[in-house]
Length: 306
Length: 327
Image (cartoon, rainbow over all chains, first blue to last red; front, side, top):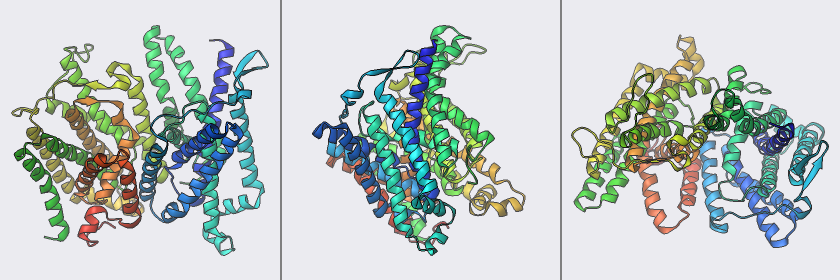
């Protein structure tokens, strides 16, 4: 295996990890502040992707498409929070799982109703369609670099938002003691709607960005949602830092596992069966990683108490 | 008889009555639907042991359902292609005999549940939900990427497996078999709930600290419950594969896990016959609505939302009132 290929795969893993972070950050925020497990987070990712694809088809502008994705996902999140999610905060996790699973059914079939069953396509903007040459002579798609950059920028922005702003203080206080900050005059229900919409917007952004690489179709959100769960379990629920580290770990493990494991098994067995075993183990690699983390730290790398 | 008991009896009788009427009217499709209800109810009865009794919200029970399905698929595949399953260190042949397949399905899914449970039960609450979901997904991707047994396309079995003394290809006979299995498992799970183990498990759900204080280990109780639960769902998986004469990775999909859970909720959590009511209602909705609109799941979603938000006892709870509802 050449070093160039390896570096390219590391970049792919980073790009994947950064996307997962956008999903996992929203999930972990929502869980940390409101104590809610939201299976419908993948639907918000899908809403973002569809809004972006529809806007891009109508206007031809990728920037407008991203803006539309953010607005549509945040709006969908706020509406869902106001009508359904709000009633679930005091319920047990089983009710939350079921109600948000029901939301997935409604979102998925509703989207299929509006847009049909065929996938939509969102084109990478022309300026970013080609490769760029990185130091060391590596050719890498400009668009994927943009995703990595945007993901890191959003991560930095989120850290600043949480640690430096008034909203961030309220969010952290909400995680620690929601009754107390309610007593101190913060409008809790408004804060909850805001946090939910923020998480939804992040998911929508991820959906729109990935939509340009993959096809935009119903059901695209759930595989990502489940990976985001793995990320959160590894990182520790409620921790943004954990979500970031977990996302990069999962992104790199998944991407590099697919490349390296078949080569690894080729050291022991003949090429064809090595490829087969390697591919099968690679498909399970992140779950094995998760199981490993759980054995040593049941609350995740950065998690406190469950 | 309390109102709940009467409703249970009526619900339980509804399945064979439906099948019987369908037989008289010569409507084999309806019999097949009734068989599907019995099998899916069986899967949900399995999950209900973990969920209703143990309070373990497993979103990965499709793993056991799929393992049961593949146990049937792999054994029958080798039998129909006359190839041995394994030659070394000793010869294992495929089989077309249901009792053997069931045994293998139960053992395989119990072992998987033991392993997944041992890891997942180290955690509680949301972690547990996410981890069971993730393990289910792991097996799903494994089934897709492992080409020996059809990979993504799945395995077709040409002739339904046999059961001594029955012609399983006759719909009503296969229904009778599945219904009998459901009846036995319902009886056993009712006994389990009232046994010393079941009471301890319920106690571990309600107050784990106190259970520990009297010298029992909640972890061990939950692990046993999770294993039994997985084994029952695995058996249902083997039957489901036999009903369709087809297995594919979709049996492992997380939507499957969600659906099995929906059966319990639609029927009523923690009620012995809840899964039967829920599965019947779900299949009925599927059958009625899918004729009206392609997007029938949207209505199922809306209904589920209403049940969760406003009618927490499910179908049986709304009919029977609250007097026997679990905590």
